[in-house]
Amino acid sequence: MLFTNIGIIDENFKYQADMTVGVQADRITYIGKEIPEDAEFFGEVYDGKNKVMLPGFYNAHGHSPMSLMRGYGENMALQDWLEKRIFPFEDKLYRKAVYWATLLTMAESIRFGIVSTTDMYYFTDDMVRAYSVSGAKTNICRAVTNPTGMPLDEHVGLKEMRDAIMMYDGFENGRIKVDASAHAEYTNDIKTLRAVADCAKEFDTHVHVHLSETKREHVECSVRYGKTPAEVMLEIGMFDQPCTAAHCVWVTDSDMDILKDKGVTVASNPASNFKLASGICDVPTMYRKGINVALGTDSVASNNSLNFIEQIKLFALAGKVKSMDPAVMTPEQILFSATRAGAISQGREDSGLIKEHFKADLIVIDASGPNMNPVHEMANNIIYSADGKDVCLTMIDGRVCYQDGEYKTIDIEETIAEAENAKNKILSEI
Image 1 (tube, rainbow, N blue to C red):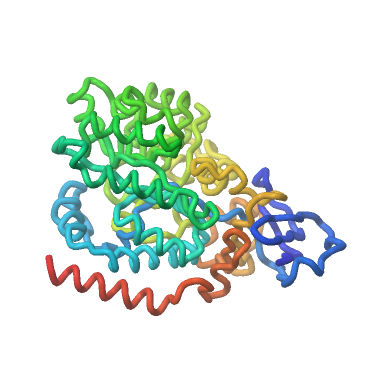
Image 2 (spheres, rainbow, N blue to C red; image 1 turned 60 degrees about the horizontal axis):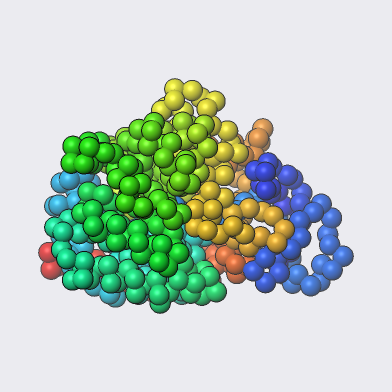
């Protein structure tokens, strides 16, 4: 495809008007002001008038099958939400339900410009199948929980995590990667946490974990071990492999130094943290310390939407409020967190930028609407004025997966109907 007359957010996250971008196979092979001499080899020509191209969004923390629980536990404290709504519902999940729920999440993700998700759950086989069909990318993991200290050789979750890595890491020409994962410090004993860390080293995979999401989690860990969750993870080796740590709302200044020193990516989830009243991640301080901060949605059970541009705006506003400084985060930093930072966290070094020879994971936003005009600085309009529904094209590895209301890889009517059926079946059994 050859995109002509289109604005782009370039590799430095600056806006450039009236550009031409050429895609061949799964790569961006041309960026320039002029039409390339070999234009005929690019195939379809896309008129980009009044449109802007960005790198695709990277959702750095999600739980895709939880789309079945959208709106199920409203106006509840976190512990009640988990124990009275989420855990009973999850106890009734089954394979077909997880497949359709994941596919529904992929449809919503692609619609809103998310090209890849760092995804944590179980029923990994069925999630992988949904990702394969959708055309989306993922760093997926089978999260391990072992709060009772079950013997490791009897723990099904540990076996399933290892099996998933061996079976699916690198699947679909690298679109699907598999990480090791401990759900969190508070849902595991020390020997289980260490086993997950050892597994990541054995298979040379990335790691995904929840970290200091709530004050209660952070304080109880300090009482239990005399260490913060970050200090516990450091001690048992969880940060020895590239790690994405979700939330990090209550991390201390010294915790942040650990995250920086170990190259841990923080996945900030502002909508979920606001909705569950967990607090506000101190992203401005993390930026100052040089921590790679990416942006996540968490599940729609604690967010309700995968409208990623909405997440970007909340992320930007949260940083201002946390620091009480309206100028603390630049548009370039914010857009980097939404795109390139997530690609880095997933180990996709050739992704997350509009740059020649990078993967053609890109989105196009319609900038013709009243909400996008007038334009003083396009990057600010994207962050504060745009809406997810302004995304009119999503391309992943050079393949158009969504364009102008049409899903190219997913039967959306069937997916919605099957997800509704699964939800009703589970509710009838609770």
